[in-house]
Amino acid sequence: MQRQVCSVINILKRTFSLQARTISGRLLTLPNKHASLLSRSQVRPSALRSVRTMLARTMFIQAEPTPNQDSLKFIPGVPVMKDGGTAEFLSGNSASISPLAKKLFQIDGVRGVFFGPDFITISKDPDAPWQLMKPDIYANIMDFFASGQPIVTEAQPPSDTEIKDDDPEVVQMIKELLDTRVRPAIQDDGGDIEYRGFDNGIVKLKLKGACRSCDSSVVTLRNGIENMLMHYIPEVTCVEQILDEEEAISQFEFEKLEKKLG
Image (tube, rainbow, N blue to C red; front, side, top):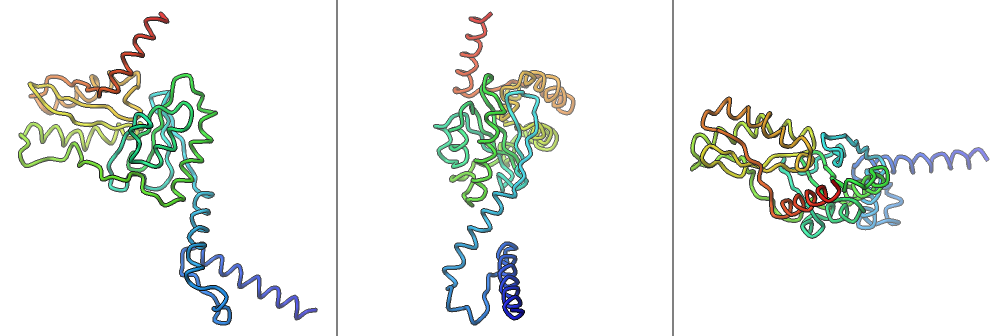
């Protein structure tokens, strides 16, 4: 009886030792006398599935509020855009290059997905309740990062604030300030800013993510960005927000609805 108990204990020790080595990501090995039972090709896929399942179950996703009550910043604790860039999708049709964005747009109420270096900002319809959307958002983010898929399937364009050899000195200064002083602060709020040009003293910018439809976006442009650029660069006279066609149509429809309700 004692020998049987010892035998069971030894088996359990080997089993738990094997699981620990698999989960820690080390090379999965078996004692020589069991080598014939499992080939290397049979073990490796199951080990990877085990690790991915563990990551999905243990991932802690933090949700942070933004200045926009209809946008939340989700922080998965792992890199999102690994090259440090950003990507924004305003509809399911535009999300064809991102498996995660396509999944998120299938959740009722989602109207915008923004990927930052280490966060994901979800924007919703004003009448959609966060308490009903959050469980699906968490589940989709966890499942995606456990799958090992790329966040986007196509290469993203170079940074809008990348300084080019033919940029005038004033444009170089604008890009430098936007990249080092403005962008970090706006990304903290779950958004980003995109440089669109400089003409006759006017800096043209596009707000993205949580800042795109935020009520304080005009204040951000005028009191924050514009004042700072004018302070350091005398050639700058004002800052102008640029809307893409899809955004302009959405804003027009929203203003039309406001007038009807008012």
